Picture 1: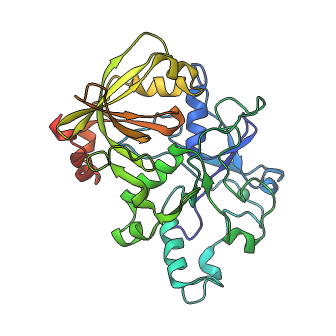
Picture 2: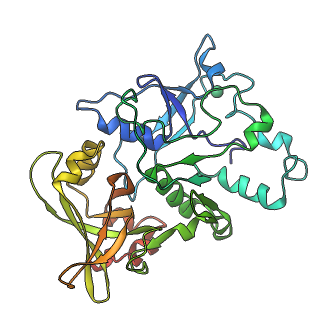
Picture 3: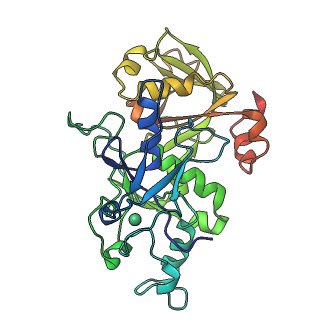
Length: 339
Ligand SMILES: [Zn+2]
């Protein structure tokens, strides 16, 4: 296992901005086709000022997200050297005394080692959606709302590095962190992962996610997730609305997620979302949404209402592949096998 912190952001040469891997993927799929891959350099400015600029390898961001395949991530390209102060290249073990860094508690050290197994992790999530995006922000990025604190390229001291926060308002990035933590960490490590939610406070990461089978009607402050099938597209083109039906039922009622054409056409990343919905070989979609379950006016069904499409993450899945990964159990819990 690497003794270094995972590389959670890199500088995209084409967009001229530091991005997380989830942002890189969204930016890539927001480009019109044919698309060419981006080039990534180290987020540390000193590494980019070297005669041979330090390149970073970005894996799988040019493939659409998937419920069952390897996740996208950044990793070191061993052909390139980094500056001595590069935050990603510090070997933490060299600084440890009895398994702890100066000032760390046992619990801190345990969490730090758990996080090293993840491609990205989030300390703070800001679920508020409406942030005015400046016109100058490059297409395909979050308009600066996704801040990987401390890794924006300024030279970072070693002391400061330890207090660096991984803060985001990107639900997609949070979902990737959650899914990877669930897959890669031991039960004890997973339970130790914490998340600070702006406006709410700190809770275990796992508490922030609720399977739709157990989510309460009326509650809206948790990420509701479950497997669903696409049962309708409402017109042609990337602005078409759509409807998903979940595999789980509540109160003997089917659960739907309906996105109107209007909502879709106003969404900045509709091309990305549309591309995901158009994956012809997808057997189901794993849905993650910060939304509210409401009983429909007729009382015959339940709707998962999502006010802002930024708060919706869809992952196409394949039943065959799902049977082969460790996540099988939770896929089944979401009712995929009943489909
Ligand atoms: Zn570097």
